[in-house]
Image (cartoon, rainbow, N blue to C red; front, side):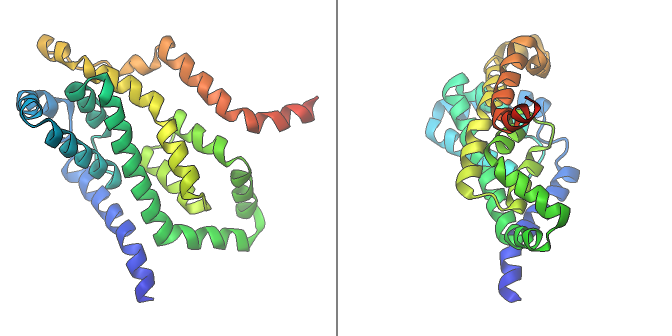
Amino acid sequence: MHKTWLRRLPFLLILATAVLGAVALRDEFSFETLARHREQLLAFRDAHYLWAVLAFLGAYVAIVTLSLPGGTVATLTGGFLFGLFPGVLYNVLGAGTGAILVFLAARSGFGEALAGKLAAAGGRAARLQARLRENEWSVLFLMRLVPLVPFFVVNLIPAFVGTSLFRFAVSTVLGIVPGALVFTSVGSGLGDVFARGEAPDLGVIFTLPVLLPLLGLAALAALPMLLPVLKRVR
């Protein structure tokens, strides 16, 4: 029993921190905060580039791992400080590492036991789990490419149905690249936005030049699930 609670402790701490962060830090990690401290951030980057990169990665990993508010602002900051490249690389590394840590904490704490219980129980839950496992790559990529589910929840679902670390890590890192490219690109142009006293237009992701490629990637990811259905229809 003692060992069981030790395994669960990291995930429970993540949940507790997420709740506290949502209440206490709701207004701290915002675009206005970034605008207010932009000169200090740029000065630190110019004087201590390596430390700036390490500090940024540490902050981004902490935000994702602890499910704190500010993931979008962190991605914009990566573009603002480091440009489209290597900014997008740092953003993907930070978000991917944080997601993997959440996955590992959830799987170790509750996921392995829950996945085993679902499989042993049978019934509808076991059938759903089996279908997810049959189309695991497609489902994992779709959850990343079509952000209908919160990022934190997308990290938990695979842990609770028994997804392997390898599949989760690969689908996470590759699946967040398209969105990271878009928001990092927006962040790289924040200097001009700040100069005009405006806020960034995050609606750019819903414009056709961005949305169509994302939908195309989502359709490609869903293809392995659709092919059996199309064959039955024929």
